[in-house]
Image 1: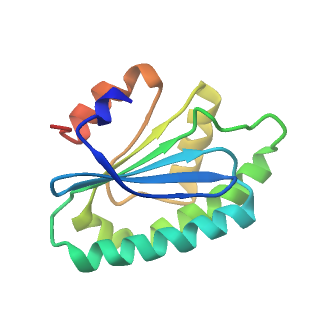
Image 2: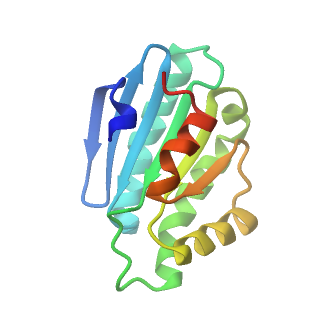
Length: 157
């Protein structure tokens, strides 16, 4: 994506549910997640990776609000997933992020979730109003709104 041209990939992790790229430009880091599905065992494996990443990030940096999380759901396959199945996959994400809530107040710039349809927005609005109240801003956007959103929440220069 052209809006990330200034960022260099310094790490990559993937499994059949989540592909993660750690992108860096100066002191700024973006954790870019390409979400394919929310299979619980794969989500659990991702969470182990994220815990190690975030622990190292906290140790190595004292930069205020330089981390941006991007969850890209444009390749997400929800065809055969029930609402309950999706919630089962999202719940561990929400719990993990909730446990980091205090730390996020000083390290996280924002979280951006890229969606493809309004049904997904409704789902995440429900998640963020019931099981996880974020410590920092969360933007739920379509691909058309993405560049504008990123320039507002995280100066990419």
